Image (cartoon, chains in turn yellow, brown):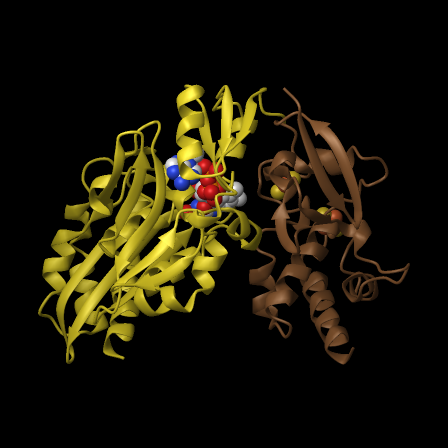
Length: 288
Length: 157
Ligand SMILES: Cc1cc2nc3c(=O)[nH]c(=O)nc-3n(C[C@H](O)[C@H](O)[C@H](O)COP(=O)(O)OP(=O)(O)OC[C@H]3O[C@@H](n4cnc5c(N)ncnc54)[C@H](O)[C@@H]3O)c2cc1C
Ligand code: FES
Ligand code: FES
């Protein structure tokens, strides 16, 4: 399969990428290409030009400074999964990055591309919502930072403007909590049929507070506030997680996605299973 | 619009003017003689197009040739050094890790990636590491044995 013809420009910096986008209306940014190139091949996207941002070196890498874990937009999933800083400060993100697709996909796909693309079956959007991440953006009208909860607006729809580039994501470092991601992967594509990220702060053997976000079966990740409330103050036991997880149905909203592999009903029934698993795994880390 | 690229494949550098839409797998296969890299699914799922790009396994059906400009590609043809099969190639042969052979170049390069990170993998690690590669013939058992055998052979070296 060949993509339709397009022009190709390579950006040397974020500013250069912005300038090129300005000169070539309708163009698309190209990062790892692992969402975009499949779409081009199927001709579901036919942009007149691609602006390759893949070589802007300062957009790549993981750092911890001033109490913030910062992950550059071009950091490949494999690097996120292997990073000890990510494991320490945002374990759920390391879990999720390590379960994306397969090793070759993780070598090419990037954090920025994953969230800009905002496929409902992607793993990172739910994780970033649960971890209260913020997303750094640069565009013609200046820099801005958007909380993950306001970034993902719907199926493949984000707060990102046409000319805007995701530069990084940021998460508070050194938090006293445990976090984990539990995923039901599609058996062929490995994309998330259901993915749940949980963050738990422990108070001895009880849950002080919890953040839970669910993706995969909804158009954009949702925070499971009913589950969060139900688990807060309760004992950190699998029995209380299983009970709280039943509340997720109230959090999911009306639009549940289904397909030939996993129907709406099946996904709805399986959601509490993965909520409970993510809570249990997060609690095990929170106790340490 | 054509774009000049310089891509090293198995140690030899190739300067070409390519259409930006050309996929890396076609760039490689159209060089002449280097058809070991296969196109199986063409939808990023099967891994038969796996090559090493600057030493790292990628699916070349999902990369553009322009993205590989300046990089060094290793294909299955480049794995044997001076006519001596790589221990992975030897192991796939010895352990009967193939039947039709279509998936084998990708399997071997994906196994190369796995052993780079984990030189002593368990059977489960091997199955996990080869998650992005599909085989329609072998049932995988002998592929897992071959990778385990290669790991042992590489450890002895
Ligand atoms: C076989 C396969 C399996 C996969 N399985 C999973 C999975 O299990 N879970 C999962 O989460 N994902 C999965 N993916 C998707 C993978 O994570 C992609 O790499 C990722 O979604 C996109 O990242 P990219 O760097 O490849 O982006 P590209 O494909 O280069 O770009 C995707 C989109 O984002 C835009 N974009 C890219 N970077 C930026 C930026 N910095 N700023 C603004 N816009 C930008 C592009 O213009 C484009 O519209 C899979 C992909 C494949 C091929
Ligand atoms: S041909 Fe590239 S993954 Fe199947
Ligand atoms: S040996 Fe035939 S596809 Fe694997």
